[in-house]
Image (cartoon, rainbow, N blue to C red; front, side):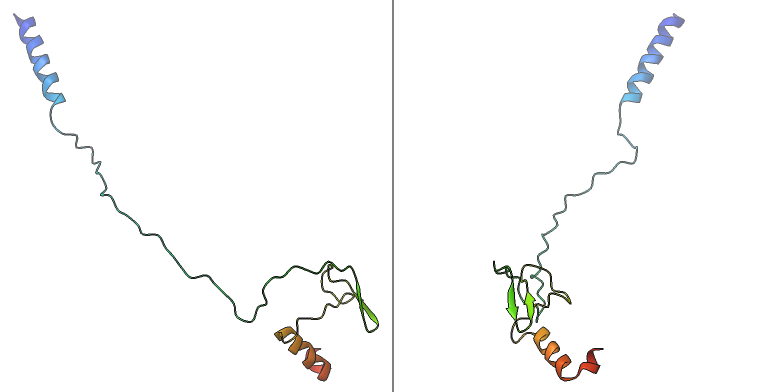
Amino acid sequence: MRLAIALAATAIALAGAGCGSDSSGETTAPAVSIPAITAPAITTPGRPTATTAPSATATTKGDKTINPNAPDSATNDIPPPEGSPQERFEQQCRQNPTACG
């Protein structure tokens, strides 16, 4: 009889342990929708737009030879576009060389 009582108590304890809710602290987060962020394109005034270099290999201007496909440097002085801030700077330097050092 003791064995039957022990088995019945064990069965009741096991059944009771399986019932109820899980209180492990886990919670479910609510669904949140985040709208897409849109921003206008960034533009910088005064910057010339990128253009492709002409297909010419070398041009002679005065006593200097200019290669438009090579980078602008002291030995390959490519003139800036007309009316650009770079052209105004170079004109100022020609008029007042001490200002440009």
